[in-house]
Image 1 (tube, rainbow, N blue to C red):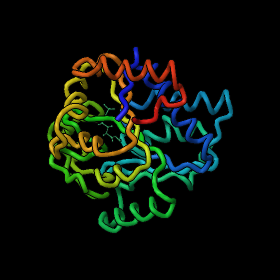
Image 2: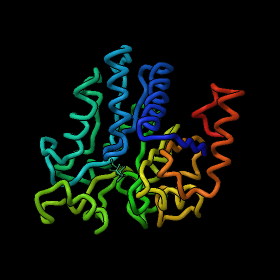
Image 3: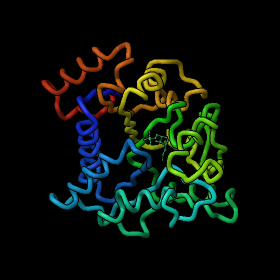
Image 4: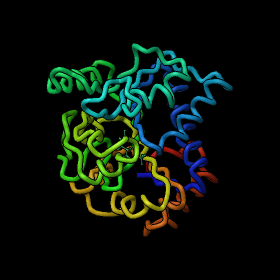
Length: 266
Ligand code: F6R
C-alpha cells in the first residue's frame, strides 16, 4: 500500500486526477470504477479541466459506478446517477453507452446484480477503481460486517449511514434504506485502487483501515490485501496515522530518486 499525504483537498484531488489521466493516456479504453460522495468531487473537477484545457479524451473510456440507492429513479436529484451526470459525465466526452451505474429501480435486483458483475467481466475488469471511505469504514456501501469476498448485491444501510445521508433529503422517511453495491470482493479485483479521504472527521477510520487489523468490521481494511493500492489523503485525514513520517519519507525518496514510481504501490 502506498500512502500519499498531501497538504490540502485540492492537492489530494490533483494527485488522484493525474493518476487517472495517466491511466487513460496509457490505455484510452480504460475501465474506470467511480465513486460518488463529496470526496471525489475535486478529482472530477480536475478531470473536467484536463478534458477541456488539455483534451484528455474519454471517448473510449468505460465506467462502472460502485453503488446506487434502491428506490430512487436516475432523474432524482439525490440518485447517484444524477450526481455523476452533474459532477462528471455531462462535462466530458464519455459516450452514454459506456456509462454503468447500478439501476435502483431494477425489477429483479438479484438479476441486475448478476448482470452488473458479468458486464464488468465482459469489459475485461476494472483498470483503476476510485474509492472514498465512510465514517464506519465502508467502501462503496459495504457496511461493517460485509463479507470481504462479497459481490454486487442488495445491502441494507446502517443507521449511521442513513443519518449521514439525511442532510440531503427533506425528511428522514425519504432517506433510502437499501442500496445496490459492488462487493468488497468485486472491488478487490480491480487492477489498481485509489482510495481518497480528506478532513479530520475521517482521521480515525483512515488509521483503522490502513494500520489496523484486516476485518469485515472495517471494510476498507480489506484493501491491505490488494497488491496495488494508493491511498491519497489530506493532512487532516492523515493526522492519526502512526507511521505518517515513514509514508512521507517513502514519498520524498521516490520523488527524488524515482519519480516515475509515485502512485505505484510498493
Ligand atoms: C459512494 C461510496 C461511499 C462513499 C463514502 C464517503 O459511491 O461508495 O462509500 O465513498 O460514503 O462519502 P463522502 O465522500 O461523502 O465522505
